[in-house]
Figure (cartoon, rainbow, N blue to C red):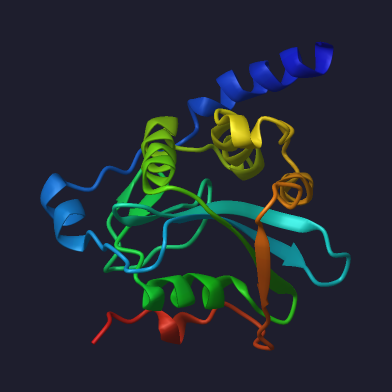
Length: 196
């Protein structure tokens, strides 16, 4: 109980440090991407290669559109409008850009994908949009809070630790995973180019 009170106090104090970014309606509408893939929710975890500990959590959701929730992240792209950590227009190419931005000699990316109904995916996107901007270091807390608001993920702990979220997500029946490795020494900025 004391731990929860401390976390809540820290969240309240730091919430004032979160910076709001709110792309205009026209930009969000123009970027909208509807995939022909079956609906899914993917937990994206950036993992340190030296100790296999998670360093960052994000959610990629494919419903009536495909959107990325990247709380307290550093990723930006000129073709992806953002609203408070939610990025719109996540085509397969932009997903690759995101993964290759993070994957490097020190870090690999784990995608854990769960097939869901389109309605479930759209509810998840709406919940991501409602979360608001994340303070630095709150990727785990905010990702876990979003997941925990659905019965399917009620067992996910409210935590700062991406590895704990990843382990809990893996317990959901039907989850598959894939890993992305790269050997460069920094962010793959050559992939930060518009499609086409």
